[in-house]
Length: 393
Image (cartoon, rainbow, N blue to C red; front, top):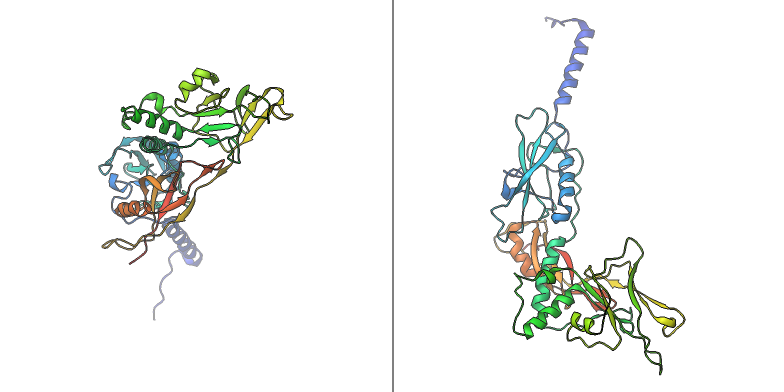
């Protein structure tokens, strides 16, 4: 039996092995804190863009959060820069713009181009093949896209206003309207649509006037009636808020003929006045302050009227069955819609999840019902994001 020679002596040999083992350990890919896609073209082709969501307002921050979580295959730090935008071929209605980024890390021969989609959101975001995550991606479901919501609200108000009349919102939380009423942006557009339709000149939703597209609301203060005494006329209207500056007023207080031109055809008491503000409706922290001379019907000169909101609540939301031929998935389809005064989903758009199920998901929510959001007891149109999960057959 022959002994195997030990090159360099026992201590040197053991030390060398330790160096080799440590080096091999360092060369092993680190565990990724997120899933890694095995989908060909994920992130690197326009039809497999990374769906971070957020719309125009939040997309930049969400893209950075996603990219900051990524590392190279061996944990190398990434550098990236935004290089432009492209419109994908799948975008049929012109709503989606993809941001392009050049991404690289030490040792990579040339940068890789990633496509990021800020107009759709995927719950199952992963690292592209050949990359890892140093930390979880951690992007939550984004709020409704404000630009899409504003466009949807304009179109819905024009459509429904042409055939319906909507009562104004009471300034009093009890719904009495004793101090006056509020006409929010949706109601203003609906009134304009009804007037134009009655005159035989309906408004084209694709060509609304710039005046109509200006986001505004109108606050109307009524005279106070104090028993048998003469009504006490309002002297001024203001908005006070618990935080931040008040919304900006559009022009001067309207009375008399000016008020009649501002709200044509609306039956208002003599002595009413109105103020217009560049906001769609009051914020939750806002209160309407109406000043009355000599204390009005009481001892205080000012009536400060808080706004009471209640959120929309789902009523019937049956989850649909998976369409025939579609593979089972636990990923939800994400939709954005408006909940109208009747509690139905209107202007429904696909904003994320399995695209192959988008049509079935949109059809399903058209049958859903909800309790609409309310302001001082009156229904208001609100944007929402909806989640549709398909039951296996």
